Image: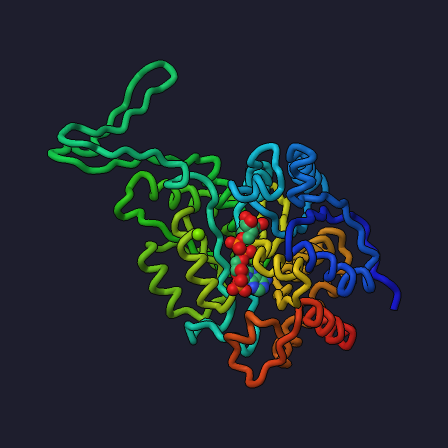
Length: 402
Ligand code: NAP
Ligand code: MG
């Protein structure tokens, strides 16, 4: 078979620990034998980030703006323990945070559904994609403990010095207060990312807030979504035969539990934080969650939802066999390759991505899987494979599909 050619490079962001090991295996076994892989490589491994004073992360985000599509391996977000482990010059920021800030995007997370790994919610037949707004609210809040009686107010001082005040509470005794904010610009780009992703993936979009109680804050989210939808997306959604629907967060939660899946659920920052863990664990495993950052400017960055699987890496370093699930990392590659194929009208590339995904699903459904899945599968007598053995099994299935 002739190798598939790529006209435009993918931005490749390498990473850390066990996922870095899987990264290389995936390229060697599942990509390079079939594609003339054309990537612009950035090493976001912690050592190289430290060596370059984290410039490499910025360069990789710039490259994503240039080419439009990136695939990222999981990376270490340094903490105190990593400072000494890697002898770091400083506690570098999370690469995901840096990249997100530069590309201004929304993160979409969707489970990979296979027969034999059933969701706890039995009516969920199709994946539910969660779109989390990743700016502001309680994550950028300021808080205060109120020691005793007194008046707490919100004060806005305009540039010309005029003050606007709103009473929070007349305290009679001790209590607590919190102030938080968001930006119209950020909410607008959140909305556009969600609408674009719904069109891209041909799924309905749900959005919910608590606008009945929060008549200015949450209501602004609702209004901005509706305004942008009416002006820019209504006709395109109708043409695509998909729906945008807004409801109260309580109602959304109740409906999600009764739904069949197959839609995108857009959530404010806190709701998305909490609900994405619920949805992903109900679907089975973090190792079966894809994640893509979609920017309103049309840039895409694909990755796995899980981290670097540090515990397995230490076993690997000791020469012990590991059984780490590579599916979410493979799907990061297929997501990026398919998008590259779409943008370049390279059907062969998109078709390959589809087949590789199919190969992953079929391999698991045939009973061959890693330990994390073997523990939860309803398939009887699953064959538990090593990290490498699983990738080789996927290759066999892939070759039979090509
Ligand atoms: P993690 O790497 O997601 O792993 C947590 C646990 O989940 C693992 O120990 C393993 O459980 C299980 N697991 C996750 N992925 C798996 C896979 N592919 N196959 C099998 N089991 C899997 O989270 P962490 O240990 O909290 O974080 C490790 C490092 O990752 C940290 O330095 C953190 O900063 C970084 N991180 C990066 C990203 C990112 O780049 N997007 C996201 C999250 C965390 P068992 O040990 O029980 O087998
Ligand atoms: Mg969380």
